[in-house]
Length: 260
Ligand SMILES: *[C@@H]1O[C@H](CO)[C@@H](O)[C@H](O)[C@H]1NC(C)=O
Ligand SMILES: *[C@@H]1O[C@H](CO)[C@@H](O)[C@H](O)[C@H]1NC(C)=O
Ligand SMILES: *[C@@H]1O[C@H](CO)[C@@H](O)[C@H](O)[C@H]1NC(C)=O
Ligand SMILES: *[C@@H]1O[C@H](CO)[C@@H](O)[C@H](O)[C@H]1NC(C)=O
Ligand SMILES: *[C@@H]1O[C@H](CO)[C@@H](O)[C@H](O)[C@H]1NC(C)=O
Image 1: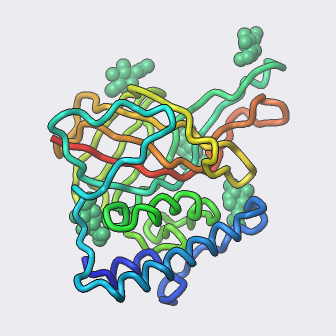
Image 2 (image 1 turned 120 degrees about the horizontal axis):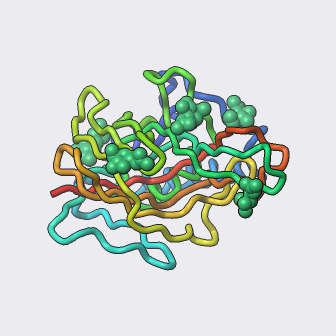
């Protein structure tokens, strides 16, 4: 992909007034949220300068991308697997509360997210890719799925993430018209806390854990392992006090897909 196109995809609405973008979630944004967005654009401006001075345009070579490592690292990708895709997931973590129990704590009840193709950014500008979950969390997705944008970027939708039962996170990377990378039902293999400075959620929620997931039976496209890293927000309150029987918490993360 040419540098200009790649950078256009991360600039999004800032330079191209094309589609309608969701509003910046100023009310819900944390103090510092606006700084986060402007830091992102400053970083982009620097990349534009660097790109102008490059003799050749950066190429999307996934072998150049390196999986972010947590302070207490997850197990490495399996031998013989190769990185097939990097996506930014933007959506909600779902929780339930037992309202009949005064001391109940929220229980995880799956998640729903739209996946956006960040393969080129992750392999060319990892710092931009790592800033994206945090920045994207400052914006809400638009209601209409077909027109969803990962504001402030213009990354293409590459798939959907949801749960088929409580213990089976599922990724459909066949749902985009142009890109069919397969589907993978997963099981959790390992979890590790997000770094202490991980981005908080819209209401100050801690970042959800980083995960290593492995394919269950039924995966296609050779997909074998999925990592959730660079998480932003998504954790529930400590207790169910004042909460409803089911509720959602906005989150964003990077998902890394490895295949045979
Ligand atoms: C974004 O979504 C959250 C959670 O649903 C909501 O509280 C907030 O008001 C929304 N903000 C905007 C600007 O739509
Ligand atoms: C999306 O990701 C794949 C690899 O994961 C890449 O080959 C492709 O060029 C990307 N498409 C776009 C539109 O960025
Ligand atoms: C209420 O919730 C707490 C915290 O999850 C749990 O330890 C306790 O067993 C629950 N009590 C009942 C009656 O379910
Ligand atoms: C999670 O919440 C979203 C948004 O409210 C909803 O569309 C989805 O069905 C919920 N999923 C589960 C498993 O509860
Ligand atoms: C959830 O789905 C997976 C994959 O289909 C299955 O192996 C597992 O037994 C299911 N778990 C429950 C609790 O139903």
